[in-house]
Image 1 (tube, rainbow, N blue to C red):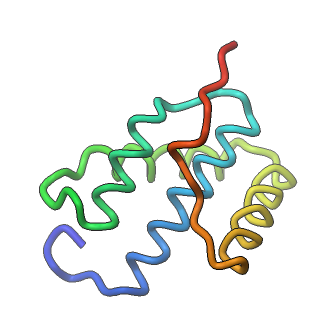
Image 2 (image 1 turned 90 degrees about the horizontal axis):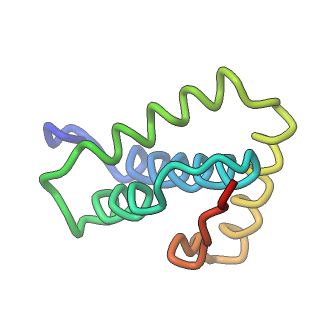
Length: 101
């Protein structure tokens, strides 16, 4: 995407990964800063074209989740995301409240 080599399918998968990662973080009660998710979302939907740090941080978090999160938690987050998408909605990251430990 950074070099102009992306397409709509890739962008769609990146946005789904962003939401999935956020949902898994909610379940695990350990949050990356919500601002990071919101900034990555802005990059993916085209509001900020010159920033890569936040999307890269989200993808690194997602990789870590896939290696360390129990499968049932990842699957639960996928079900939640699929339900939203089938309803024609997007996740509302602004509505998510950080969990304090």
